[in-house]
Length: 354
Image (cartoon, rainbow, N blue to C red; front, side, top):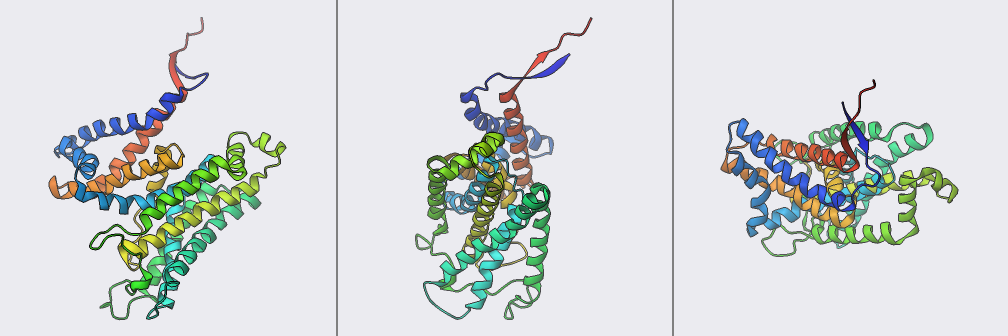
């Protein structure tokens, strides 16, 4: 009879190698799945995962897609390290964009260097405020932040739909459900003329560096680790679990809100009903693929960004449906979790009782 046996000490090498193994297995399974669906599987997987890296003209697209994923995943990873499970980053991402857009609309027709920083600050506050709801419910009432943060995502989506179809609809937009286009001082500056690469990309890398410094070199980062690994020891050490919960959820919400504002003030240039892109959910995969480490998250963000860019390529080359991108991402998460289980446990035979 088969049984799961916990390993005495999981291999550190396998712990860091398992994301690479998961990616390789996902590609192999993807070939089989897409072939079974009637598409050229090998070409589909190559276009989804390899072509964005092999064609230099696609690299700007990778950076634009990776930036919000990295920012959101960094905030989530802080909480995951402390066993604070913020699953509602998508909603915080949307509310951050709404808050920043509110500043943009209030300053319509105005100019000044201060407008974009004010929008970014509003985006951070919006995301933090939305994350404060599950934080309060978790700390005061013991309600699972998994459920509350996830369900609030639908509130954010409906709020966005109401605004772009109602009070914030562009009066000059031919009745399309969208806000006014942002002005020059309300959009992220591009780093090269005629390029999609905007200021948010280097800022995402800078945030990753700051997150690493905080998590690895400060008392606050140590508190997050201790609360996550040994709550009893954390209490004896003077670290308050409630305070860490608040800090983790607010940090995750703030970074998700900032990512939302950067997306609204960058590629979109306005708010539309198509703004919810699933980045908040995909960032969960990024965080685990990067092993909750800021440097790993940067590479994980690039890997998942490739599935977005490559999915668009595959729609043209092999006529793969748009939903295939989500299928590939879900498959990657499933395989990653499966490899993690095998790193921690092994399968053995249990002798039958006589």
